[in-house]
Image (tube, rainbow, N blue to C red; front, top):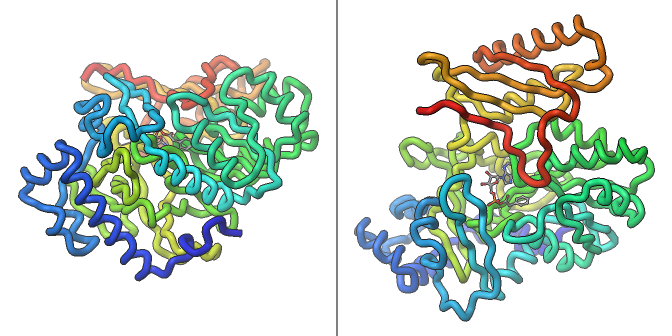
Length: 433
Ligand code: DLL
């Protein structure tokens, strides 16, 4: 079932024509209403009317997260302050947060895209949605909330935290869809075990997980433990929030990006050059419909590729592959590029490990050292020293074999790695340069 059948199944040429029309008016608006863009375009010697085709977009300059910071808080708004009805912000790891503004039309459009996304994930009006994404400046909670109401399903606005209470509510309210970060999904599972609630006691059937990178093994884990179909949802506050792209339940293979709202490119993160369809690189998004804060060629830093093969579900919007990591959290260990999700995949393939791990980077002399701390299951931890040693060796060997990196592996007690309610911080980089 499709929420917006006409727009979700637009033939390729019509979709392209629609994108070009929206792009032209978006460029006009930013050029005349946002001094930052006027200056950028002028510096590049380009006017909105110079863009005649979608490919011409590569002539325009990029927008970066730093530009949002430099124009903190409202400098990139394209409408007067009184038209803004909502603000969100994403917490930066360094410096100031980046602020995002929405007009009423933006909020309504977002709700519709989220409803589309929920339906693509398999949710229906009859579902009861347990929304454990945080409510507040983070876009996860409210984004899911408005989308669920738009769909006509029931929202349980539980937000993050109070995990013991969450599992009780999930069971008593008969929740059928769980929305959370994948790591919090696993934490909920642990709480279910502690509360002696089995997956059969629940009515969960779908899990909508996103906001942080996760691997195919993590998907299998979540599906087995919670008895759900685990669907990957992607988004970022600067562009809108959750619902920029989502997997469909039919294929569960790559995330449809809503191309009537977003124009996408994949670039080489080092050179900025646009890469051919299918190649892996950094995702760049231009918003086609945002009123309050349109962004032109926004560098997401997320690494993915475009899959243009038509999908069985009938949606014509192309898919992006699961985010492999960020170009800026990519670790370079002794010259080898490594994404945390690759390590996670290997860890979860080793019998006896759990999905709770931390990566600690240090430098000894000129050499990078990677230490992987990973929790083992309680069955193993008790006193099976030999098996633990074996597991340690196994992890080490597989990391070396698949990634070409030598790592120290430290198996740690169950529940000794800190759990978060939102995004999990996996990397601790203690290198000074
Ligand atoms: O995380 C929006 C969101 C909320 C998405 C709930 C999905 C579900 P930000 O806090 O601005 O917004 O963080 C955006 O999170 O650039 C990615 O690096 C990462 N991210 C989001 N979804 C995924 C995903 C929300 N499915 C940043 N897989 C993005 C991997 C993801 N990374």
